[in-house]
Length: 332
Picture 1 (cartoon, rainbow, N blue to C red):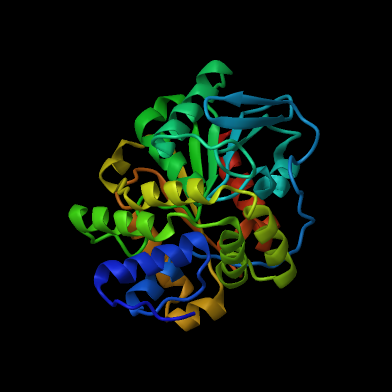
Picture 2 (cartoon, rainbow, N blue to C red):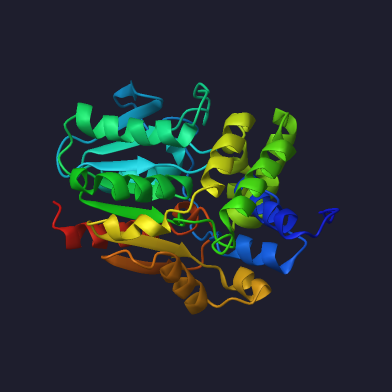
């Protein structure tokens, strides 16, 4: 990858954001490298990858989201994919829990072929998630989110803890790693810079970025990376950029003490990647715990070897961690 023309702090953090969220596998500064390394994970087992809906199931729309329902009994689970992802992210988790839980898998607007919406996409996603709980009369569901989906889960738990039983976040944090010390004005400038840099991104370039991302940051297995990149490329580039910019503008840490339910944070780690970034598994786990400081009932679990899409790298370890968490909650 060519080095950016500027080495200013804002440009460095923009590079980090692009690397972690849009698929550029390397950055040109130590700040960017640290930010990227703190938001990644790895692959191990290689499950078959669904290309659209996981199976034939009831599908309906709530607000700006598409929802699939699996299972008929048990505590409801709401599975929320991350950036440029669809229901296919959760195929193994659905298979594991659909016989003991009612599983709702959502796809956000603009992702995986869904229509794009205008306005503040994160706020609309949060309103839609609350709408799913209220309109379907779900009794204390557990939110399970990956990356962006984890950010949404944390945000909803801050605002509506009384509606849910718990949160599981897989590599999704209340603030983007590497930007935690950034002043608000600088954060706003970074977001504006990213929007400007990604305006007019065509689908061919977007698909190329997804391939680069999946190979370098997304998963360990090259064949899986190629297949996931093809699926991610079905998302709208402009919508992906908007979600990314709004997420980078967030810092949810001040309201973490408002979360009254147990939170499980799954931190993926791959030794080879960690050594290259000079961060150990224990150090990454500790950093994630620090970013979640103030959460009253927090557990941080490392899954290794795994990259950002840990559900594909280590499907059994991820499902086992979720299962242990659900058992501790006392769900069926």
